[in-house]
Length: 279
Image (cartoon, rainbow, N blue to C red):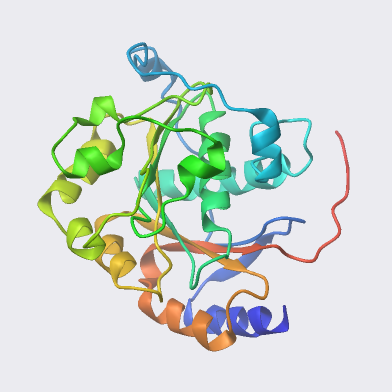
């Protein structure tokens, strides 16, 4: 944990106006700059129709096993993701941002876990809708974490074998849809830099003002996949797993990320005692 603290201390010097805004048991979050309120787009939501989207009911035991907690308000850990959601939405609204990439320096940091919980928490906001896209094309895990299997997925869309409407599913949560990737994609960096992906990101971003698009992206240091994708999204959330990355890896990752688009850092697997509370 000391290595993470040291790396973040250096990042604070490099990133002006960075401040510690909230501490959680899991995750701990550092958000950049000061956030303002976000607008109400409730009237628009009435025009969004997901009736043609297949609904796949999630298994609560499978979710609990994989630490997907945001859907259960009885789980005190869900409060951490609700707080993270609020800070992110405020900052995104301030900048008119609608797409966010969730990255990590190295594998096993928990970025997919954070991506899923964040997407669910955003969908709980009555003013917002969310779509979670699995763009970790080398090691896609969103479907496995959620316990879903689909006949059509991002694999088919990228090969021009299925339109977007045929690959998205609703996981039984209002205002949330998932675009899963069911198996690894060869030539992933070239795929992510293609016009097809560029057009997809633009379509997802612009179709609804209320929509937040969350991309679960590859680790930054394992390939050039993330570097290809990040210039195409509005902002970035960095997930650092306690003990999963060295100080030099964290510093190198921060060097690669554009400072003006980095929302903040999530310390995942932090060794902080959780406390139950109520209002």
